[in-house]
Length: 349
Image (cartoon, rainbow, N blue to C red; front, side, top):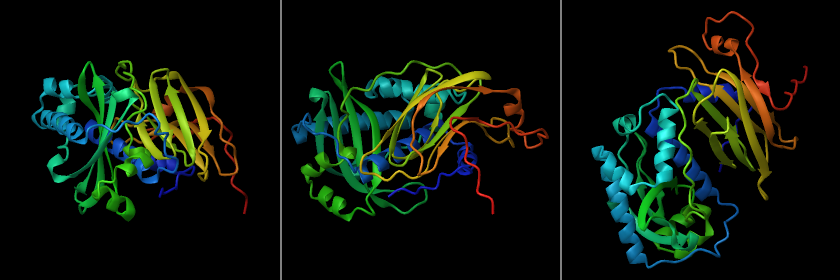
């Protein structure tokens, strides 16, 4: 289900692909899309469902569509008050940090660049599940969704809600392509509620999302790229930016960015039982802000399938030479990133 191609040279390739002028809301939407596809389409190890509740489906649907439509219209109309009233505090802060970490202004830049969310009327309601003793809820729909200029495809569309101070609020939406999952699609259209308990992507949150601390504007815009097939990685950068990667390939903006001089990264790597574990890579980059410049890698952790992956805490430094080397006209020796593990030499021919 996954395309694994992240080798040593691919870190730089991915940076160049992601360093374009993507808007904050578009980046957030793309990251959520990848996360949803991974969780729901693969779902090789379904989560425990002992604490999952089955709510009154008619009432759950009414709540979901009322909150979602309020949230959707607030985005279309740029109504900050309505958006905050229908969005969890955790998501509000994550969106704020994402934009600030790219030198944007929140909330102005968020509403300026937002994309119209799907109309829920175009989807078929499947069912809802509750977790956290009735404080979280996941509502699943199915229907055709068009992304950009691509042909409309059958997708599952999942809305995640959290109960805050007696009011349901939307935390995130996620969707995944059903083209290669005909049996799942059939069961969704048949409103098979048992299916929702069988795959992680349809489950409600097992815990209430915490509200992250507000980050400062970055000295340097930073991005972290991870490809960790068959592994789960929990990561913190500079004590502020928290990330989790689970059997996936994804790029994240670093909250608060990076800084010249000393930076820190701490992460734990756990194997996912039953999944293959080919090569793995972590890369931290300073993103280019000057037209024509290229990103520079300042930290990496690259292993092949024969190595055992382990995490740790590392301190790495960003020098003036790192920044200068982002200019294509740089003539000096290109500075190397900090290597968490020594790079293997290519075999001689």
